[in-house]
Length: 274
Image (tube, rainbow, N blue to C red; front, side, top):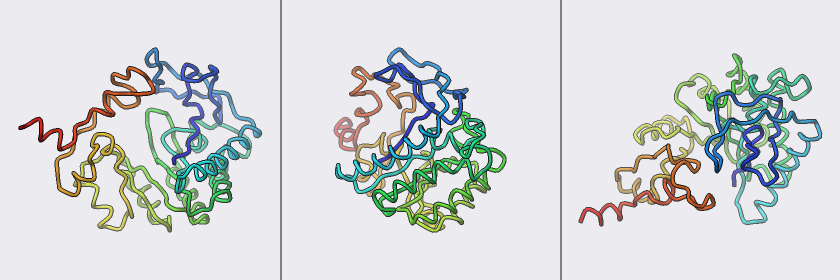
């Protein structure tokens, strides 16, 4: 179960009570818009979090982890990537705080480490993974600063102390120096996400021992029979990025159709070709 706090990536139109998101600082993402029933809209300026808000978030993550295990999950992945709350605290463009949660590397990494510690204390470290995305996504104006290599070296080295189930790293393909340092620094299991790279590029990190596992989320969306296709060396359906996050014919928002349940299986294709 992946645990996430959107932070500033919240639009009132998508909430029950029309609320504005909380974030490290009152800075809205510059180059991103929210998906709403009425179409794309710019994100509003978020509400800066108080220390009390921060403590609530830490407790919410650990409580959600406990509830996930009680519901039957084997473990949780704490989401510290993709421009969401924990990543927002890491970024110098999204976090201009002057207290113990902003400024230097140690302070900007503090919330993530406190969330991980509290979650591990609640359900055990072997049930907890952590996800990071150095340099990305660009369109959310998250920038860890010129010290990006030093930042992730510090963060990952601290994560070594928790004996986590794994570290999930998004590799966009243009920050090899940073990724290589993360791989060299982290002592546990690494899941590398190659951001929908061609299949022939996915096995190299396994062969070179750069990663222990490869994430294939995008391929899984567009191929309902992904395991069969991989086992039998079958061609894969391409992902339609325009239909992600309800971008297609959503109809009932709770049941999106186009781009989620309409990708054909190999059996569908074979039947069509008869």
